Length: 145
Image (cartoon, rainbow, N blue to C red):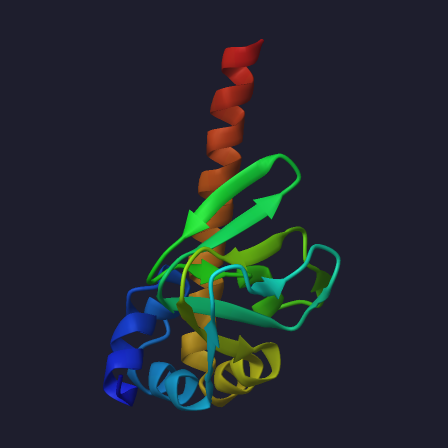
C-alpha cells in the first residue's frame, strides 16, 4: 500500500476523518506498519498504552473482561491511548495474518499541536460523542427504572 492508500484508510476512521488533509498525511507518514501472524499478541491487558492502532488488513480479537469484539480493516484500536496515558483495559490478539498502522501518542499530539484548527475539530467531535453517550445512558437508565 502507498501513503495515499494509508491516508484513505485513516480518512475512514471517524476520529481521524475530522482532522482533514494535511494532518492525515502527517499521521500516514509517521505511522509504523506492524504485521502479525495468527495468534500473535498486539497488547495485553494492563500494559501501558502509548499508541492507537488502525487495522489495515486481517482481524484481531479484542477482549476486556467478559466482553469480546472483532476488529477488522478500518477499525481504530486504543483510541484513548492517543490522548492520555493509561493501562490497556483489555488484550488484542490477531485472528489471522493482520497488518496495523501504529500511531504513537507523541505523533498524534505533534499533529494536533501543528494544526490547532484540526485539534478544535477533534475536540468538537469528542464533545458530540460524549453528549450522545450521556443521552444514550440516560435513555437506558430511564427504561430500567
